[in-house]
Image (cartoon, helix red, strand yellow):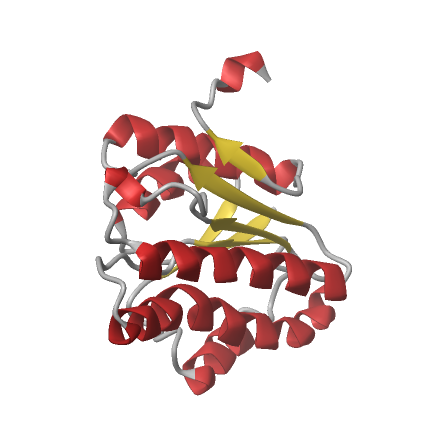
Length: 188
């Protein structure tokens, strides 16, 4: 099973990539070499992948910035939503692979500021928009999606590993939505 992972240079990806590889997935990692805010670079990247099907998209690209000013909101939407929307527009080309891949993304609970920071409206709002966009794309293209919402900051290796295992499981058994309090893989 071939998996495209965006945001491959980020901290979360450093946990996700080795776990996906250990699970036997053929991982294609997109980091900073492809600007996900540039439609042309995305199209070129997807075109290079047409040699074999991509069964899952794990969208880790994004960012965090504190603040609630309109300028911060604009940057958070650019990093967390526009990157996915531009990538999703290329999904129509994915029909050449025989269908839409499973989509897995990282969200954030709307009712809880990250790491107990109260000045994070722009970030939390952008993640809510991302979640809506992921589900809309999956529904419109008759695909599957999972948006994993960690409870709090993803600031430790243990938390990142928990999320990485959940991502691996979501690829093989996509769900509609999961708020991740603490993930015990053995209990599943």
